Length: 531
Image 1 (cartoon, rainbow, N blue to C red):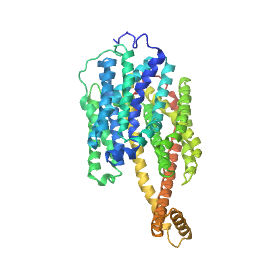
Image 2 (cartoon, rainbow, N blue to C red):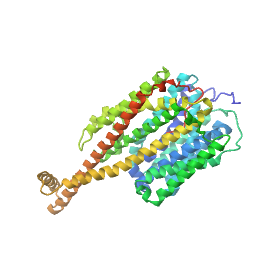
Image 3 (tube, rainbow, N blue to C red):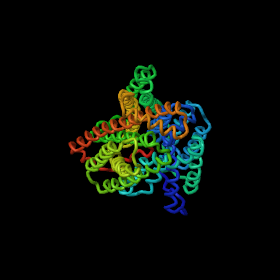
């Protein structure tokens, strides 16, 4: 049986307990966003390609998603305090390794281990959080706040890391992470009793084979989606080999799960229609969430914002997320029909994408984007927790663990798919528009001539010789064409996302049986360690 000794020592107040748990959760969330904090800085420091930076993040995510089902066995076997210490020590060691290494393959291996360690620490901390929340109402609000934190973490990591990247090399972020892990872990160990939160079960018949197969499939899927564009997809042997590996290992995994008496991830969850709809909506949400990178990319490449000013304007998005999470948590507590809040959330995302189409321009006041960013945050905040808890509640209690782990798979797939779509459309759409602009640029066009003269005059006024000013003016003209191509790509991509959102809203409106699932977090709990 689980130990009946109090989890925390009697002298620890409730607010101290909550603060210490938060101090342990925050580094686990931030470490995921380090790769996105400044991809150019990471690529420059390690001497790698931007796609390698993206893949280091994918490896972290794949490790976490693959280890989640196996991690529960270790969590039950090892006492909570010792288990937390193990996870924290691994996090510190891998962070130090990322700090000192310059080799890509070493970095990927460390990020993989970091994902496993992150799953351990986050699992303990979230279990401790919800041990303090005894009622269904508190649990529903708690999960809403946690998934709201996940939505905010990218913008928040940009805010806190921008000053560090400006003053130091990129790898200093990992040293900073080490110092963030230590205080919270030490305090949590001091206020916790030596207890077990679950009935102890021996570590026998661990399904390592399923874990290896499943995690390898995730890493290969990420490899294909991240590097496919760079290697011209299936024209390259590496992508072909990875695709064959995914198909063969996926089939092996399916047949293995059907044959096992105790499956690693039961396929029975897909027999429940509302669960399938729920994970499909998760996939769509993550694709739309990834499309937000188009906006941040526009801020940096077209408007020329540095990471610090970018983080300031993203505070509006964080404010929207907080508002959306508070509203959705109340909606869940009041047991209102899920389809209405889904329609409202996706409608807000649709408004954001359509509004941004009218705002994309080579020159724009930053204040013009405040309201759209708030709307985007409201939409995402209203959708994240309701979709996840709905999907988990759609299956019987004995399938809750599998449903939770499989939900992480769909979040991972949506995350990777958004990267692949962004890379694909950015290359081809920008290329098409760039060539169109250049086709219109001729020396006979009076507008082009006037623009070149304007550039030349401005450069000459800075003291540049006339012959060099002419070359610089031509470069500025091509730079202007590149910016216009970037703007047109952003508009095209958001138009496609808008069409997708219209289809999703119509499907939700036409499926009234979605209301038949009752939210229940007493028996089924969403995955605590997920992004």
